[in-house]
Amino acid sequence: MNLVKGKILDTKECDNILDHLEQDILNTLSNGRLDAETVINACNKVVSDLDEAYYIKAMAGFGIDESMGKSYISEMRSLFSKDSLLHRVKVELGDMLGNPVTFNPPHKESAVTREILPLGVLLHVAAGNADGLPAFSVLEGLLTGNINILKLPAEEGGISVRLLLELIKAEPLLSDYIYVFDYSSKDIQHIEHLISVADAVVVWGGKEAVSALRKLIPPNIKLIEWGHKVSFAYVTKQGITQVGLEGLAKNIAETGQLLCSSLQGIFIDTDNMNDLYEFCNRFLPVLENAIQQNPQKIGIGIKSQVALKLYAEELEGIYKNSRIFKGSNCSLITYTDKIIDTSIQFGNAWVRPLPRAELLHSLRPYKNYLQTMGLLCSQSELGALSDMLFKTGIVRVCSGENMSSSYCGAPHDGEYPLRRYTKIVNIDTGGFN
Image (cartoon, rainbow, N blue to C red; front, side):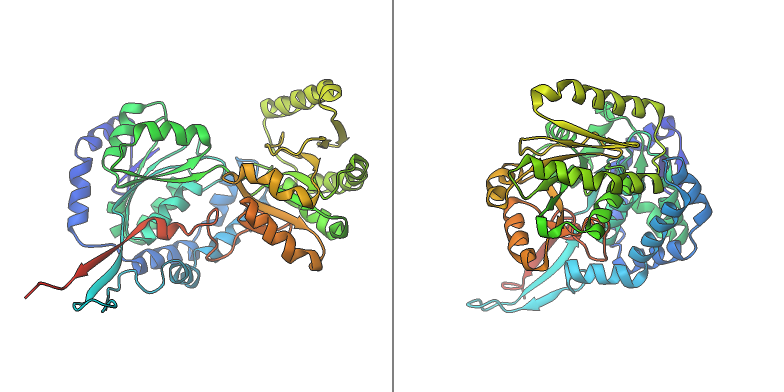
């Protein structure tokens, strides 16, 4: 689905648009700047008038039940309300966006005027592992005054285009700042054309996606990566409580382990495999209960893949020295090594030993891939463990239940995106009459 100037276009019409895309962008850049308040007011109107029934039905197509759909909509209304977005801009950019500041630097006679401005044009190459994420990425570009070109992921489902259409309806001025194309990632010719008009390419994806784009992006165009990350839990003996275990299970069940912040596996603060077996025996019924309360509607093909992977694990268990704890529509697999990898997903998590004395040594090699740690420990352990985890590359520590939740002003992977989508410019007034 393609969206240009607030209108849905077919692929042939989009090819014609590309012929004069650069001139259209230059015309928009010549007409002044988009201010954050205009975008914020439009967002506030969209979330106030949101067609809840439509989005619940759309999310059901992705296997999200009604209660979870309502939860997502409630969170979206909170994050995109006027007070939340004003707070976010203030946290990430301070008072400088759209407000030039003049000052006299030390040891300099003339004054300098400094201002935060948009990069110009952002090409968003979005991932499809979270519903509505492509539209969310565009919104961040709009908040910073950028023109945004979105390349939709395959099988996006239409939610992002619907959200962006609602935004344009609320504020028609935004139609000049939003372009959406559904070209395949294999369509190199069209992708290169989109890259050529951008000041920066924002890519959401794994190593393969980032590597492929790096080969296409010339040196004069900035690459902003939001790569796939891995998140997991760390459990100490003092941290094993019923509430804590239920939180871990809830994250596994509700997210399907598909998000960068989803729990893939659990490290236990021990070097004794018997402690892992004891943990699995206690945690498995908790996980079963969470899966029953939040059943994932996954296709027969994915179910077959999960079953085959579990069967392969059973066959290879004697060589891997692993053990599978099977439940109803879920499982836990113990390993003796201390590596980090993704899980089989959809209710299946790995469990590994990792004494706290080995945390830094074992996790540091993964420093650029780590994101969220669901930490189950006592209050007295929290400070020291968090400090050590941050040194490994982890950027967020929280309870298991909150691993995939967000809050107003939360950074992405340890960075503020609005800062990355802007530049600081200055005018040195010395020498002018």
